[in-house]
Length: 195
Image (cartoon, rainbow, N blue to C red; front, side, top):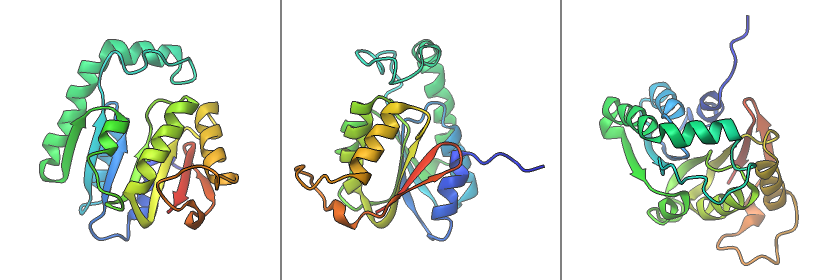
């Protein structure tokens, strides 16, 4: 029987040969993906970024998160944060948590500082587009940008396709998108962009 491949397998497949990769996960929830990545790659240094706030989806439409998930997130955000912090305690010198929004989190990092960035925050078009534009410059040339729920949430799919599959030369982008390779789609609804 073939074991289901999860998002952490998709990420690990790409970073496994980088001796001491530095990455960021945007939208940590309970830290499940973070924990698996840190276990799979002993040299990984990971930044975990999440708001853990009942207001995370405030003002966003149903395409940001499904209604049942939104309710779970709002009601359990403190518990989710506690569980995520257990990952930090287990891998203490390899993890740093920032309790902040995605866009404020991106301001913490220098351009080309990360080997990868995994975006799994709000899934509406505007949030995903803003996240891509904020985090893409933070990834080193040759690194990876991963986006979860591509093909599952229309906002994720539209933002990824628009930015990486069409002519955005008229946009005032803070980076050169012409060097970006095409988007690969992998297991667990993962879009993978080689920077």
